[in-house]
Length: 86
Ligand SMILES: [Zn+2]
Ligand SMILES: [Zn+2]
Image (cartoon, rainbow, N blue to C red):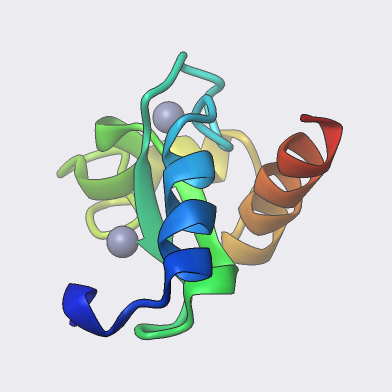
């Protein structure tokens, strides 16, 4: 899938991955979580724990997400806000 990305999409992903975690604010580099697979402009900057952690992660128990009272759209909003501030 990665080889189908345009140069602009790659650039966007690189900027997202440089951000802190959108949920717990852990310093970057972060991972890019895709809200919808294949849509590069809806990806969210997440630390490994908030992304894939068994207990805390979106793809796991989502504990940190509940603590922060956030869903994917809340986190996407944080990612985009930080991108626009750069
Ligand atoms: Zn995090
Ligand atoms: Zn993900």
